[in-house]
View 1 (spheres, helix red, strand yellow):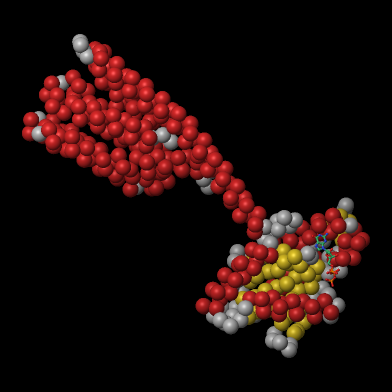
View 2 (cartoon, protein in one colour):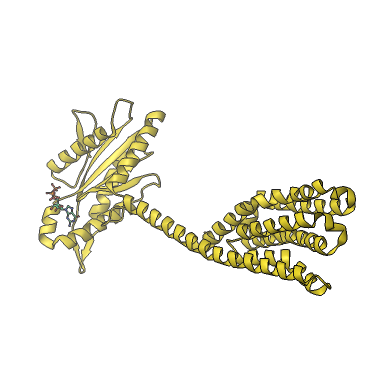
Length: 376
Ligand SMILES: Nc1nc2c(ncn2[C@@H]2O[C@H](COP(=O)(O)OP(=O)(O)OP(=O)(O)O)[C@@H](O)[C@H]2O)c(=O)[nH]1
């Protein structure tokens, strides 16, 4: 089971991965693009091949890491993060060496300006891509520019370069830190909204008093089940369960005790050995409904009788006193066709329930067809 914090970390990491995607492909082609117009590949063929190949190899490794992200992450999030950090660090190292040579090695002078332009773009691109983890972003930036600054300080006459790069480093780092704060803030807002949405969605399905499903949710599930059963010629069964003499119960013990009794019945029904696919809901007032998703017509009476007995035999205890509660149940099953509406099935279950009440309550009645209702 993944806890909430792990889920958040996963979202942050996958966002960072998707932001870094462009870089993986860009880095594979950036070297040839830089070398080509300045004939650098002819002037320095070995250096060109070394740089282009090393960038390509790291890009390929990063692409593999990207493709197998889910698997590696499933095995170990730390391993995935470590690999991400290492591989993006490799790219930064190669670019950094290239940058140092461009500034301080005369063989690279023909491509100095274009390299500076490329490195500038790469630095800001890398910081934007790694903003979800600002420490990664700043480390990457330091790898990219740090050596050039140090070399500028060490090599005679190159101080202006060091100063210029250091100023750029400070500027990009500052933008990165500020953007990271904004990123975290919007990420937190997004998480809060997600939580509120799922809470609202949950609440829209749940009955506030009994915390089982409500009638709205039952209706939507019945519609879905109806379509499914129509296509596959399956039987849909509905049990309407109504507490007996509940008005007297309320009058005798008060509305709040009545509420507690409704919670007790809901819990009893919810626990009463239903299948995973069965649905128990509060239909309204002191009436509950059970939708049997896969049970055949023949099983429904036995299930209804089991529930009736369970309600009768599970005492509702008030201040140590057992208060008897019973319920009547109307059952209707149908194999739906395109012409029939789900409402019809509810009407049939209601008709069976009505006759169960009329026949003395605490009983199960089955609706067979428009003319016949039987008692168990
Ligand atoms: N405590 C409480 N009572 C409720 C709630 N919803 C409906 N009721 C009460 O349930 C009672 C239902 O009464 P009736 O429809 O007359 O049915 P009954 O007294 O159970 O009689 P039979 O169904 O014929 O056995 C009413 O008194 C409603 O006020 C609720 O959420 N809480």
